[in-house]
Amino acid sequence: MFQAKAYGAASAKSPLASTQIPRREPAEHDVQIEILFCGICHSDLHQVRNEWSGFMPTVYPCVPGHEIVGRVAKVGGAVKKLKAGDLAAVGCLVDSDRTCPSCQSGEEQFCPNMTLTYNSPDKHTGAVTYGGYSDSIVVDERFVLRVPSNLNLAGAAPLLCAGITTYSPMRHWGVTKGKKVGVVGLGGLGHMAVKIAHALGAHVVAFTTSPRKVEDALRLGADEVVVSRDASEMQKHAGSFNFILDCVSADHDINAYLNLLGRDGNLTLVGAPEKPLPVAAFNLIFGRRSLSGSPIGGLAETQEMLDFCGKHNITADVEVIPIQKVNEAYERLLKQDVKYRFSIDMASLKGE
Ligand SMILES: [Zn+2]
Ligand SMILES: [Zn+2]
Figure (cartoon, rainbow, N blue to C red):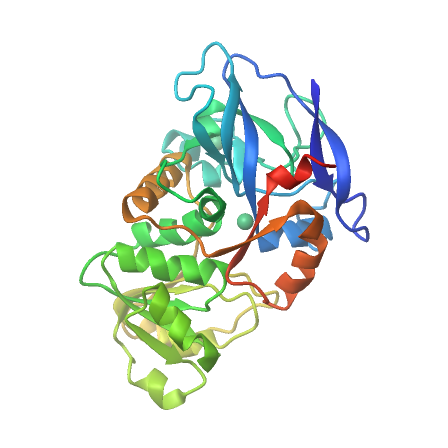
């Protein structure tokens, strides 16, 4: 074991502060990564404040972070995929049972025994896993991704959660050239969805409640922007979409969007509103429409997404911050005061 520098919370009520955490020495199949950037995902904030206590209680100290990019510092003797000096990334998963039907079909995100990057029981240390708000992490090579060298690293970090969360359902539901795709909500997830749908060749319509975001949505790659509060604007698109990705985690009228789907159209939820959403059955029955949800993606698909983003030079729009500003960033995240993701420059941890 060795000690790594990190930022973590000691309790649900405490701010994140400088701390030290144990990391295992890399075993045969392990990769030790020097973390360069880590994105701030809204899940980090929920977990740090124990807001998911019902199904995923937080174990303290909690070191969050699952949008990790860095450079390989050391590898175990059996590692083939990467070598010291290579760029590397880690997302939301650091392990799984590798034997269940989901793992066997490369969809580790559905493994009942997956190990999350933070706040999961750690098989190696017997304690809990610690995430990317740290100067290093040690992960089995199977769960380490390669990063295309042309990508800006600060902006590449959010691809590991926000990127794959939007890419995976679009691939699953066949988003491609000639398809009409809606993206609801222009935050961390939504802005990635617009960029990716555009690069996949779809006709992209962004929905926003705020007329202030119209310009930005067009810049990100939307072909059209609809201010969703305008009922007549919405009506113009009735029955016309192949696919809609709903990235909103606040309460909203999902029936208004189901109505915009064409025959066999699908609406996928990637935002998670706290309260159940009412769904009018006829909005699904007419047109044989479907409503579904989707979490991240498997390891193979995450690599495919990174390679796709490399080819199209897609990264998140980020505001880079030093780790010392992380508590302030959380407060701003709650006010949606970020365009569109915070990325922590981990060099700032050196002075702690
Ligand atoms: Zn996340
Ligand atoms: Zn499994």
